[in-house]
Image (cartoon, rainbow, N blue to C red; front, top):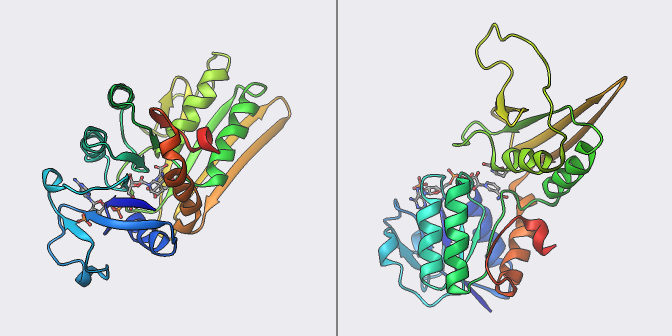
Length: 256
Ligand SMILES: NC(=O)C1=CN([C@@H]2O[C@H](COP(=O)(O)OP(=O)(O)OC[C@H]3O[C@@H](n4cnc5c(N)ncnc54)[C@H](OP(=O)(O)O)[C@@H]3O)[C@@H](O)[C@H]2O)C=CC1
Ligand SMILES: O=C(O)C1=N[C@H](C(=O)O)C[C@H](O)C1
C-alpha cells in the first residue's frame, strides 16, 4: 500500500489525482498540502483521517510518496523538502530550471532516494517527444507549437521545453529562417535556434504540434490531451515504480 501526500490538491490536476488515488485500492491518501487550505479534510470531501497541511514545515507524516501538482514557484522547495524527508517525489509540476533539477538530482543521490519528474505524464506526449527526436535527425528544420488552457502559469510548457531539448540533442546545428520581425516576438521563443510558440485559449487543455519542413515535404506530429484523465495512467505508473529508481530521474519514458 503506497501512502501518498498530495501537494496542490485543490488545483485542476490535484482534483484529478485525488479521484485516481481514491479509485486505486493499493494507494492510500494520508495527507494533502496547499498554502490556502484552511478547512477540515471532510469539508474538502476527503476521509476524516487525511491530514490537511497549509505549511510545508508542518508536514510531518509517515508516507512513501510526495505527489506534486503545484506551481512553478513552489516546486523546487517542495521537492527538496520531500527528498530531505525520505519521501519519493513524483513531480508533475513544471518550471524547474536546469540548475534546480541538477541540485535536486544530487540531493537524491546523496540520500539514495528514487524520484521522478515528468513534464508530461501522458503517453501521447511522451511518444510525440520520442517521434520528434527521431524525425529531427532527418528534418533539422523544425518549429514547436504548444497550446494550453488560459490559466496556465508558465510558458513555454514543460513538455515543449523538453521536446526542444530532445530535438536539440540530435539536430545538426544550423540557422533556420531569415525573416526580420516587424511585430515583436512573432517568430516565437528561441531554444538554440528551435522556435517555440505558446498559444493560450479557453476551451483548450494541453496540445502540442511539432512541424518539420524539408525540400518539397513536411511532417507534422501532434498530440492532444482532451481531458486531464490522460495524465493519470502515467502518474499511477510512477507511484508504483518510483521506489525502484535509485535517484531523481527526469521523464516518464525512463520507467515505461
Ligand atoms: N506533468 C504533467 O503531466 C502535467 C503537469 N501539469 C503541471 O502541474 C502544475 C499544476 O497544474 P494545475 O493543476 O493545472 O494548476 P492549478 O493552478 O489548477 O493548481 C495548482 C495548485 O497549487 C496550489 N499551490 C499554490 N502555491 C502552492 C505552494 N506554494 N505549495 C503547494 N501548492 C501550492 C494552488 O493552491 P490554491 O488553489 O490555493 O491557489 C493550486 O491549487 C503546473 O505546473 C502544470 O504545468 C499539469 C498537467 C499535467
Ligand atoms: O499546465 C498544464 O495544463 C500542463 N502542463 C504540463 C506542461 O507544462 O507541459 C503538461 C501538460 O502540457 C499540461
